[in-house]
Length: 218
Image (cartoon, rainbow, N blue to C red; front, side):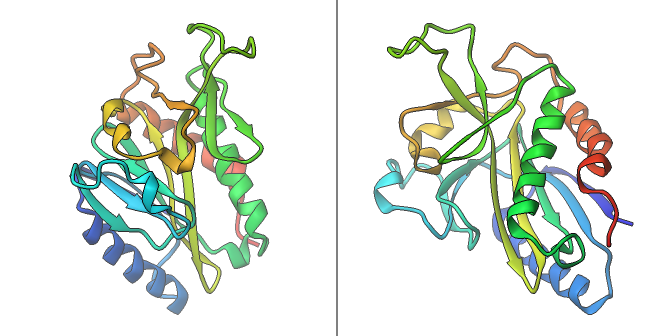
């Protein structure tokens, strides 16, 4: 059975990293089950292994943490549901690409619970939504904005880090970085889309749609 944990309030990033490291070690040793950990962070920026210094446009605004996950710069803060995913990928197909695709499918399924169409784009990590309520781009298309980020790390086939879904964060806080190295597109949230969605609503949807995407251990 996968354990689910929800931590109220704001969890410091260093504290969360230490807790993930300890849990991954316990899963590897057989002393703990897999874990889905739902939390919020105080405002901060994280740098993945591919982060470019020039993409940190306001380095003194919030704390900046080396995340040791894949990807570039991301923002975390209140109103954003962070989902740390500590799963045994070795017993779930031993396929990293498939696992990332499952994380993407999970986010899309959760957004569907609120009648939001999440989409993937070649060359752009994360989940995107088309803003049909905004003026068309010069190409005659609705602008696309990012609503969820994905970045993972594996240790002996146990995953950690995971996904973040923008429920109701302060979107202006993203302006201190080039999110995920993509400057030509903006960010959005469920509330920014005009939906009265709470963090609890998202947590319920995450739990409800998990099994259909990930299934059971092999």
